[in-house]
Image 1: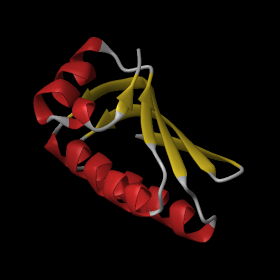
Image 2: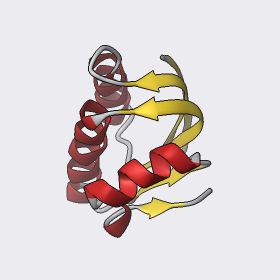
Image 3: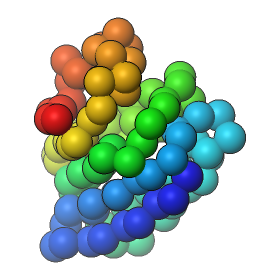
Image 4: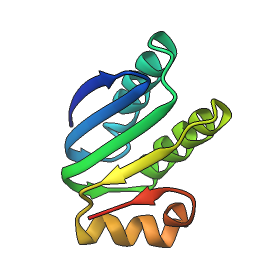
Length: 102
């Protein structure tokens, strides 16, 4: 997984590519947590344009960051989701609590 992070004010944009699974989820979690805490991030945008696969480990990473961002009074948004990942977000219930767009 390739992770490119950009901070815009109090918003963190994470552009992701590759697979988000049990091998790569810890890397993403650590990178997001480091930026969220060091940059005083309030909002998080996850750009899934180049993510072809996500498993339950990815759901866990997203849910954990959602709780952290929500505690800060912010929002999490997932953008540019492909149909396969969108289905996983739907089944997991994350689409009910996150802003998701294609």
